[in-house]
Length: 310
Ligand SMILES: Nc1nc2c(ncn2[C@@H]2O[C@H](COP(=O)(O)OP(=O)(O)OP(=O)(O)O)[C@@H](O)[C@H]2O)c(=O)[nH]1
Ligand SMILES: [Mg+2]
Image 1: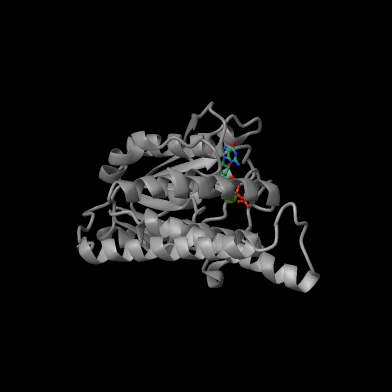
Image 2: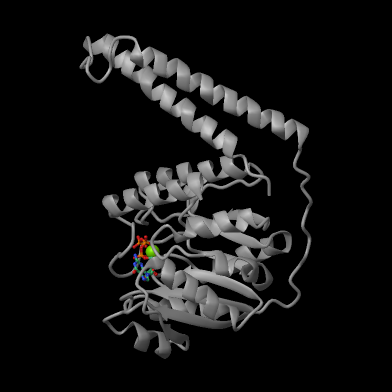
């Protein structure tokens, strides 16, 4: 898929230009900034410079797009008799993993649920086994490391691979909605930003909601031919054949893994579609970004660096 990095950088320049415009407004309202930082007239020059550079890059991207239009084709490739293999992440999740594993094991076409226990010190493994799941232990700590292992293990068992968290935030019955769209896509992502489908006590507070929307829109700007509204939703399905193309290119072991997987998929010309999924309150203690503003901010910066520079 053709990338639009020129447009992405152009948008950044316009935002920086707007920042210097605000500096001028503040200067006018408050009556002067420290002249050592902003000598008189500098903010105006920077505003004009960044706005002009942003406009020039945007125009250049539009020109290239006009000369080299993207030819989109509609994918129609139903998966006949899907065998869904679910990779489920878990880290000290003994309170939720049993219910989550049972929920997904009871869904139509699910042939296996593999719980990836990421160095848990509690009864996660025992609860997973008791629920009827296969359990493997991942020793490299981190959400991304756990997700990558879950994908690799799930690939061994089915032709449609589902990645999901074992914290009961996602619901097994949404699997049929994700897989339904797989006939037109290589990977179907869940989005949690459809408020109608969130319980009021879910992790998606205002900051996490809009942070994810912002990162998703930056990614959309880079590729243009996808519509994205969430960068951090773990729940997704992917064809095994598509996953084989990208699995060795995934390397993020931390909390911004979901973003990397989307980026790598788009760079590899996979057809990616996003659909709304339900989101409930987590069972057990949060270890990720839910409810932790500092971790959420660090994750957002890591995502931004990936989208802009990788
Ligand atoms: N954060 C984190 N999560 C891990 C790790 N290893 C595995 N996981 C799993 O990755 C998933 C994400 O972590 P959660 O604690 O649910 O964090 P979150 O989804 O950002 O936020 P909440 O669901 O609101 O708690 C869970 O299934 C964890 O069990 C790890 O080292 N760090
Ligand atoms: Mg979670």
